[in-house]
Image 1 (tube, rainbow, N blue to C red):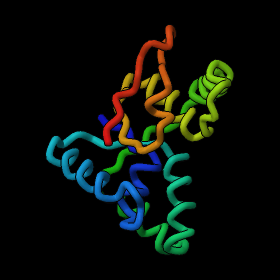
Image 2 (cartoon, rainbow, N blue to C red):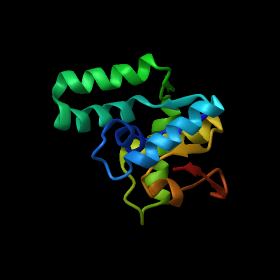
Image 3 (cartoon, helix red, strand yellow):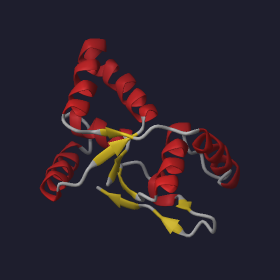
Image 4 (spheres, rainbow, N blue to C red):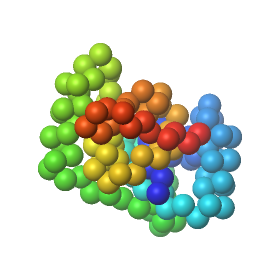
Length: 140
């Protein structure tokens, strides 16, 4: 299973994005592998806000709904994920990880799914697990 970060979904949907060509290739390769793509609600909210700026509210709705209709799965956040995201902020205080990224890291760690499609360098920096020795396999 592959976690889709806001940056990847935005790049896929917006032709003017710097990473659009890469995102299109990655989406095609993922489809060919038939790997389930998933995300978290906060990433969809971030995405909707970015898309609203570009396409208006109705356009943002259409794009996000389209992703969900085409099989994008959502993993719900649990109370423990919130606790873990605050711990990540404390343990990685030299980094400026966004709350949504920390929530994603917590869910990835909880579920053991450490593959992410992202154009955000934070996913290459973070190390997860009790010994902070598990890196994220970043797909681009």
